[in-house]
Amino acid sequence: MVLDAKLSKGDWIVHANYGLGQVQGEDTKVLEGEKNHYYVVQTEMATYWLPKDRLDADNIRDIAPVKLFRQALQLIEEKPRQMNQDFRKRQSRIVEVIASNSVVELAKLIRDLYWRRKHKTLNENEKRALDIVKERFAREWSVAADLKQEETRSILEKTLASVALKYEEE
Image (cartoon, rainbow, N blue to C red; front, side, top):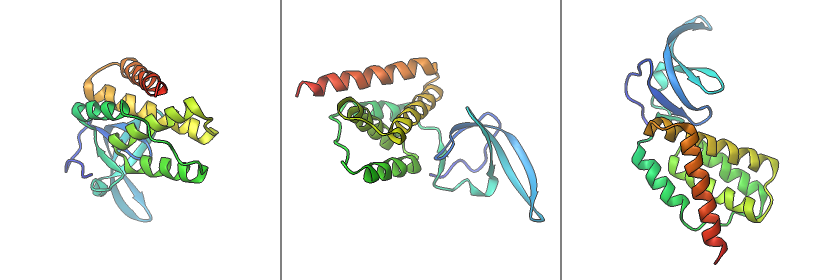
């Protein structure tokens, strides 16, 4: 997804690898004798430099609108999809979804991993992935909706638990 042509200090963006981040300013660095211009982006865990000429990259996007999070929650409330029995295929799906940088696909992955955790065991990579994608989802939603992150986390957990109960009975 293409970002706005120019970012300003305080703007929020989402990077597929780093998650939600806020633009802190601009910086210039000389690499291999060439002057390069960057946006300095602060995430919860790190700071990264985003090349100003790469704002059209597929791995970065504007923060999602609140409406999209409502749609994502509706998807979470749908019947979970069984994940592949082959751990390599499950891992491949996780990597693809994270790389897609899509709120909708993250929601489906959260739902399906949560369901699998309730009925089978998750390997360590899947456990970590579930924690990461839930945190990313809740964090971005909290900024988009101007809510406390604890509130979005709580709503997400309650929604997942109610879905597990609802489809457990089937």
